[in-house]
Amino acid sequence: MNSKLKTILKLTLPLLLGVVLVWYSLSKISIGELIVYFKKANYFWIVLGILFGFLSHLSRAYRWKFLLEPLGYHPKMTNRLMAVFAGYLVNFTIPRAGEVTRATVLTNYEGVPFEKGFGTIVSERVADLVVLLLIIVTTLFLEFEFIYNFFIQKFDAIKVLSAGGILLVLGLGMIVYFKKGKSKFAVKVRAFVVGLLEGVFSILKMKKKWAFIGHTFFIWIMYLLMFYVTSLGIEELQPIPLAAILVGFISATFSIAATNGGIGSYPEAVVLAFTLFALPVDPSRAFGWIMWSTQTLMLTLLGGLSLICLPIYNRTK
Image 1 (cartoon, helix red, strand yellow):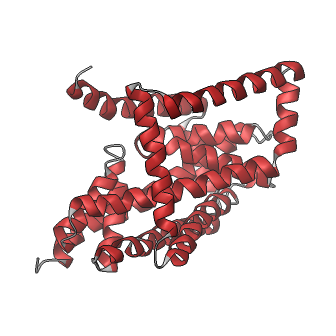
Image 2 (image 1 turned 30 degrees about the vertical axis):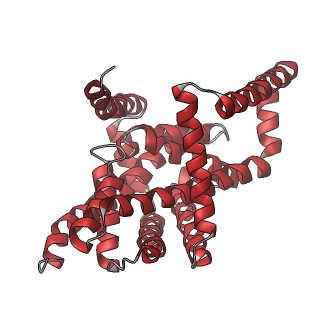
């Protein structure tokens, strides 16, 4: 497969998947029903969720300076914040192009070399991935009994244990393969893991590492609160268990990578998670759409304003 075809597939497949998932979601709940849920929602909680989302992005822009300052660059907070919002907006059109946009903004308006700015963003992503993994592990620990009972009820105990044993053996085999393998794929995976570990250790060696780590946890706490308080706006979902919030949040977070900004995939990821806890399907789907659309509206507006304001704010450059 040539590089041009790969690029076309990378751009079109997430978009096509998003369109299919939007069609599927709206075939399960009509637009009229969704509008009723939007009208009935308690907007105090939804606006509070938007505020928590904004605070997470504000913290992300502020945290960026801890990676840039050791390189000798001190870009303005305003430019960093507008770069973050511009990046989110671009991600809705071209998956994962937001990081390139962020680095480009600092190159154009703050003189930060692209490769250095992009490198700091990769380090950010490493820190975010570590915190997300911690959330997943914490969820598995807190909800071990529920997860165990779920699999026991759905599947035969012997089959579950056998599958667990097979997965363990396969996992160990994959570790050995990726550690010692000579294939192109094994080398790529090994390089990714090494880079990930180097990124983590470089953060721990940072002068202001505790401030950076504190902001990283703050960002993800805001994400969780954003998800939780917005769910309070849907009366039909109350009371919603903590386990549903955690599993729903994790599922929805991964869905954002599947399509352009989570279009179509976000509501369905919420439904899959919430129905595990016997929450009603239609309110769960409606919550997914409300959650996704309100945050998307905020990012679209602020991202668009950032792209307009960047050249005006930096007109001397």
